[in-house]
Length: 297
Image (tube, rainbow, N blue to C red; front, side, top):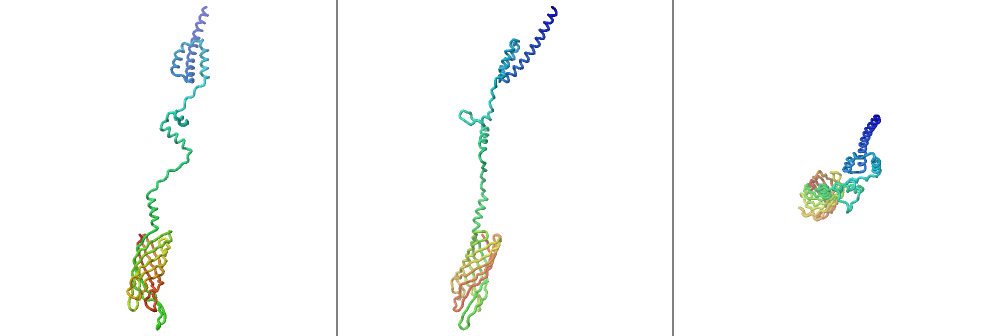
């Protein structure tokens, strides 16, 4: 009887140890099950506080309950607000998203649109330079210089026969302005208005005629160099001798020049084609070699 009693006491103590360890394991399993089943902390506290009252007869029911909770599919947590704002189209039932989320949505929605670079503002300096370039195709210039002028003469006299020759040169002056039209960088058209002194010298002295000339020159410009050629029309406004009787002088003019910055230096030769004589039996034709300088405005 004593052995049985000891055996029974030992068996009861061992059984108590096993039951206590089982309760601890059961509490841990309860906690894990509640976490997976999305249970609240209040329910966890209820299960923990009631774990000491669980007996051996409740093990089967607890196991079935845990199995049912573990096998039941859990409800997925709702996505973050930023993901919802990026994926769900806006509607009247959805609350407005924050400003940062709206900007993100706009950026994502506009990714498929072609990129258009912003228009560059036109600077005033470029527009002014283009206007100056256009205006520079028409320019004005002032010319001044001196001439060496004489007449080429042909005569046919009853007692002396016929012949030709040049009278002597006289110095004169010139002054006027020109207008330069430039259809291209090399081809220029240059009309002008000039006052020119022409004349000759013979045995009786110098004869000076005063002309207002309208040259119309075609100019080929190569860098700073100019080659000029064209007609001119002159009007004789006065003369120191009556031998020059015709009012108009028409001829050809040719010359060269250099544009050095805003300055000009050049020379020309006028070849008159009109008889300017007022004497019977004589024909006078103006020949003028001129040198001039100027400023291009």
